[in-house]
Length: 270
Ligand SMILES: [Cu+2]
Image (cartoon, rainbow, N blue to C red; front, side, top):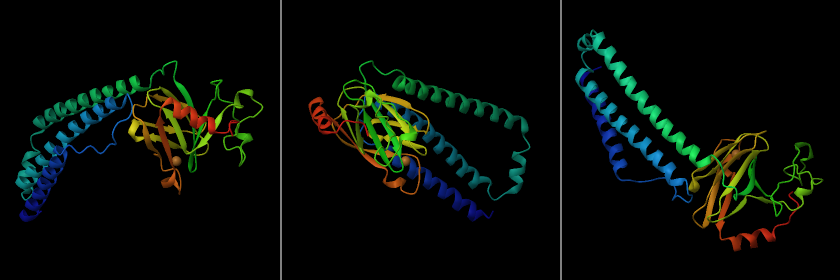
């Protein structure tokens, strides 16, 4: 490497690091405004990870810039550096251990918040089943009996998208809604997430909820919406050609408006 190349690369790295760090200090938060009870805890873990990786980025890239500037043009100096194996060994052990310990503690912090958020749903939580399908979201409400009717993939037809078994009496009052999810503000809700075809991901960005929808599995997450309004639901797995338009809407509203909305829907669960 010529001297000018080394200097150019180190200047580039320095500019990159300083401009990235400057963007960071502008406190621009790209996540949508939080709308669930557990959301701020997730954001906190996110910020901690961002700060740690941000510091690592600045320190490592600036070190790289200095090293490139100093040694990039001189092979002899480079060779001499590598002739101190003891120092390098200890540096590798200490740096490796520090990185490992930070990694483990951040991981356990994230895990504990995740467990707190998802562990056991309150007994009074409402239940809604979510079924991902290329390329839409089906929502099923259990009706007054609180139980969802059985489904069987063999019963699936164009007019029975989820394969609901109408011989099961609990399916009679179930309500099915396509791409429109309504929830009551301040009320815990269990979302039972399934998929009809491929792996989708049920993502509510404002609520910091994201869970894969896996064929053959019914995975539950629960949360409490804190803000009324209209929110977007997206599919977060590249699930096929029309993945980009696999979008649905969530309306968080008062108990009265919710009851009014669900009373307009046709029960029968198909
Ligand atoms: Cu999808």
